[in-house]
Image 1 (tube, rainbow, N blue to C red):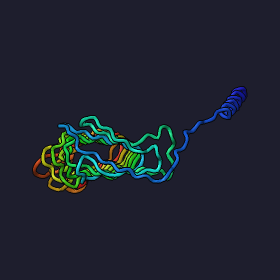
Image 2 (image 1 turned 90 degrees about the vertical axis):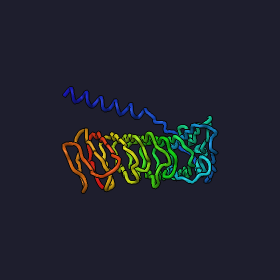
Image 3 (image 1 turned 120 degrees about the vertical axis):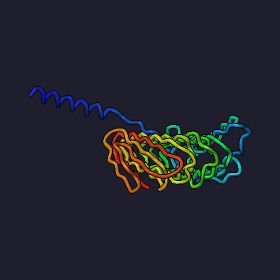
Image 4 (image 1 turned 30 degrees about the horizontal axis):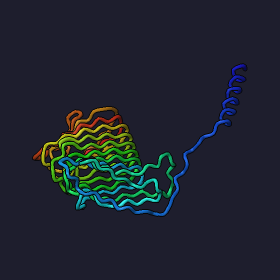
Length: 280
C-alpha cells in the first residue's frame, strides 16, 4: 500500500512540475512576395576549380548548359533565404540564406534552378531535407561529393563525364535516392553511405575502366542495376539481408557475379538489415 501511495505522490509531483514548464518554440518565418534572383558566376581564373552548393530545404534542380561556371535562378518568398555567392580564387560557394532559428512553414518557397558549365571542377553539394533533380551528364567533374539529409533525389548522368572522375561520394539519411547512368560518371571509386532509406543505383552507361564501389547502409531497401554485357561482382557483408536476383546473376556464397566483357565493376555491400535486389 505504501508503494502505491508513493507512486501516486510522484505522479502528482510530475504533473505539477509539467504545468510549471513552458516550451519556447522558435518564431515562424514570415512569407513575403515571390522574389527571383539571377545567379551568374563566370569561370574562375584558376587551374583548380571547386564549386560548393549549400542548400537547406526546398527544391534544387541542376543541369548542364551554362556558358560560364554557373547560371540560373533562385526563387524564394522568405527574405532570409536569399542566396549568397562567395569567391576565393578557384573556390566558389553558393549558399542558401540562413533562417537563423526561424521555423519553416507550409507554403515557404525555396527553389534553385541552376545550369553548370563544362569547366573541369570538383563539385560538392551539401543539402538538408529537400527535393533534388540533378542531370550531371556532359560535365567535366573531377570529383563529386553529395551530402544530404531526409531527401528525395533523382541524380543522373545521361551522357559521359568529359574527364575521369577520381571519386564519387554520396552520403544520405532516411531518404529516397535514385542514381541513374552511374557508369557514365567515369569514376574510379564510388562510396555510398545511407541510413534507413530506399536507394536505387543504376550503373547503366559506358563503363570505360575498372571501377570499385563500396556501399554501407542501415535498415534499407537497395536496388543495384547492372546492364547486360557488363562484368560485375557484388560481395554482400553485414547482417540480416534478403537477396533477390534477376536473370544474368550467379551466386557463390556471399558473392554474386554478372558476366560480360570489358572493364569490371566491383561492388561491396555492407548492410545492417534489409533487402538487396540485383537486376539487369
